[in-house]
Image (tube, rainbow, N blue to C red; front, side):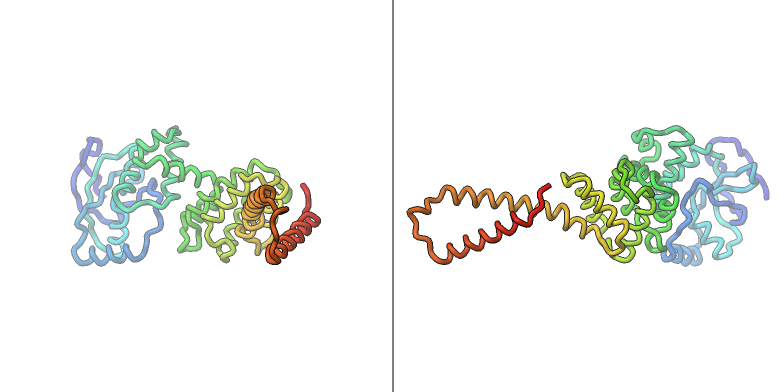
Length: 317
């Protein structure tokens, strides 16, 4: 393979026609999953009219190969169609940082990366190049700050769960929002010591399993309801028991937990509020000068029995 001339100059070196076998995918491009339908559409288009937009590559002396900067899908299609040559604009070799930022640029203006692909590249910028502030990462990558925060949340999970997000729900993985919505719960659990629940990952596995068998159906609502439970004034021991049951009982749902805790507490508050209003009304009413009809007498008698039963059976904290 002939090495391009003027390899060291800045800017474009020029358009050449290269063998697809002489071009390697960019190691800084984390995308490895390509949806079948759009790829087939591109294959059909290239088969009919050829590659209209040249690939962008640079030459790597160590590998003695051209490395792809832009055009991964076109290159894959060319190899599928067994094309002998593809048009490619050859540019000067970038630094690794420039290479990564170019990948982000392509991500923003072309087909987007998946959430884990974004997160993994942000991790490189943070760990290897020292960019930690969200505003600096946003400036470099043109990502929004909320995208960067979401990526950081995903990176806080073990690689096992990151890979599940990368795999995607269609291929047996999970959606990124599952882990994003779960994050406040995991943060809380990591600061708690609940007997029998020392392994947080096992708890995550339980929730994923429950989601797959529809015990947890709407995880956004369910995890937000769990967050309400841990931030409520419910006694800590009761909250601990809720999480133990979620962990140990395969049929126990977040909806069950919410019904017996927050919703139950809301019901008690409503009863207390209405009881106070009824009590005030009864005190202010002058019954001694009133003849009560049978209907009201029966209603008050029934209420007396209910209140008596509640007071006898209720447990005091």
